[in-house]
Image (cartoon, rainbow, N blue to C red; front, side, top):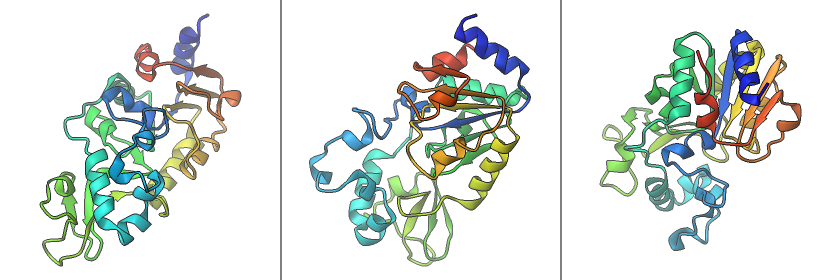
Length: 245
């Protein structure tokens, strides 16, 4: 039996499937990942070259050099016009048909929801939500990208508007974390896709899986490969779209 046949058999027999995904899920939609040779961290822009990528997306940069933070954020993290790809759509279909309990994503682009998925745990937050640091008033997803102010300000209290994204130096959102832990604890099949599993603490979630079948879909080798039932080093859309429901 081919690996694709084995995958289909696992999907057919599993009752509680959970998907854990990272940047590689969205690269086929045109969103660069972070660490590959063409990723966000290897785009050598002159205006940012004296900063480390981790600093540019850190709470320290936001607080100490907000002009730099927002310039980088506006240039690199605007997902307007980006559409879900086959992987997002297949996962939404799996959930709709009762074959997927939920999605745990490290992505901040909202493409899973745009594809129709409902139970999505965003452990790194989302660029589609913003709020005032001072009064916590919520603002729409395009507010930072369309604001004429270099540092977007709250219309109510004048405080700084920030994205609802987990920056370097911040803790993961507690609700998303606890919901993710519960999903994995109840899963009999975990599909890990499009993530190198090197960013903690999010990556440590995958290591909590104790169910029957672990499937890894990633172009490069991951720490989970040696524990997996099946490993695919190829397009995540191609693999997921092969599943028949």
